[in-house]
Length: 58
Image (cartoon, rainbow, N blue to C red; front, side):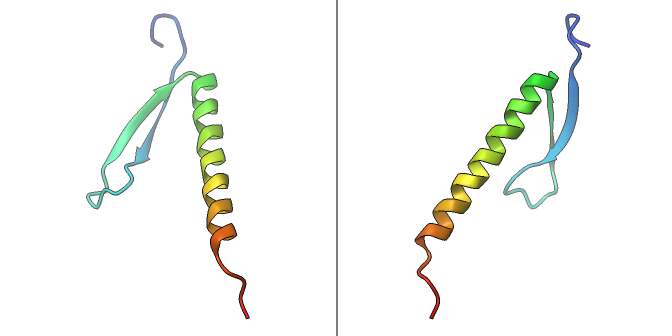
């Protein structure tokens, strides 16, 4: 709890790190839900861009 607000924390792998370092991410349930939705949307957009630029196979 921080100032009366329940916080949830998790450790995430840092992208691009070969040392296996992890960072601590904390937030309210709502904040963490927003971060997860944003990450999913970015993944969908990147996947769509990747697949739409590849030429069809023969």
